[in-house]
Length: 173
Image (cartoon, rainbow, N blue to C red; front, top):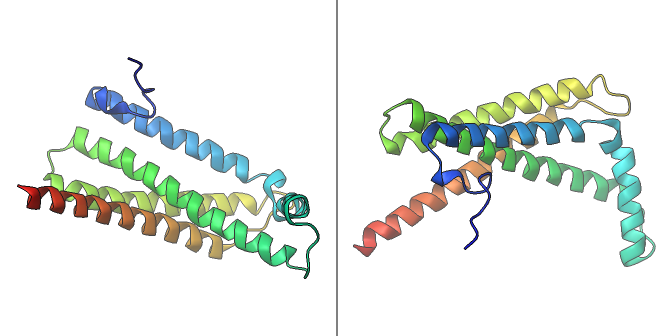
């Protein structure tokens, strides 16, 4: 029977190996952020791609909504992308805190979630600061707020889903 790759299921590893795998996943997400902060992924280029896809799938635009659609999709990408990065940070912080401390298990998840949102905020700030110096890109604190909100909301959703699952398991006995 085949086993899943370690990067996708590191639960079979020792605690410190698990921590390394989780932080490696963070590193991969930061490399992705570096790629998306280039001129290639600027609004003008994504607008051109959106226009080509729209015309191929739906035909001509009835109204000139390209700019609005491009902006909405880019903000959704910020929100969801950084939300996922916030979850990746959360997993890394949970693994680290469990390996480092003997904190009460109930305190690890909220504390790790807080660290994850703070880490995501820091990465978003650094990303927007970097974009200030990239030709064809614009720096915006509004994007930092969208990014941080995505990380916060997804972390709260995961925390609530896990709490609900724990309550269901407790009620089953």
